[in-house]
Structure formats: structure tokens, C-alpha cells
Image 1 (cartoon, rainbow, N blue to C red):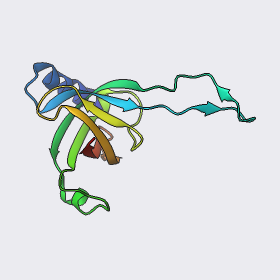
Image 2: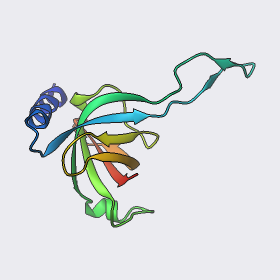
Image 3: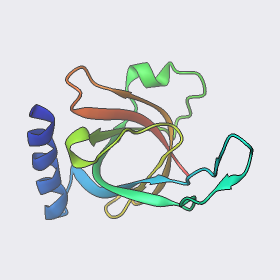
Length: 125
């Protein structure tokens, strides 16, 4: 319940257009699927998007200690109540407006203790 309420609050900030949350998409490039015999199974394999909102912030201390950290990496907070399904390093985040607009790669991601946020380390693509 908390995740949904938090998601609604974050989405209302995104609708106002002045932050700290911005409208975004979680983008998946999709992967081809094969049956046991190795034949391609018809399925959508192109990019697909899920609506969400995201807050972009400075990388935190834990992120700065991660292997592969770059000074341009940012902390990305994605309320779980604003999208369906998980967020993984196979996805990208496309921020649709605001000062951080553009495509971001997800370098690492975890859920917070209340399962109300995906917290990712993002890098501009």
C-alpha cells in the first residue's frame, strides 16, 4: 500500500513539471525467444517501454564505492508504484523532460527496504 501511495505522490510531482520527479520510461530492448529445438518463437523483440517517474540525484557514498563507478554517474530513484514489473541492468531509463532528459543506462539497481523504490546507479547513454 505504501508503494502505491508513494508512487501517486511522485507522479503528481512529475505532472507539475517542476521536479523533483520527472516523467520517464523503463526501456527494454527485448530478446529473441527460441523453443527447445532452437527455432525462433514469434514474439515482440523490439524495444518496449513502461511508464514511470524518476528522480535524479547525486551518487551516494555506496554507489561511489561500486566497481566501475564514474564521476558522471547519478542516483536514480524510481518509485515502484509508478510502474509494473522489475527494473534490471538490462533496462534503460529514458527521462522525457527536465534537466536530465535523455537516455540513461542502469549500471546497478536494488530495491529499498520498504520495496517502495528502485534505486539505481545511472549513466548517461
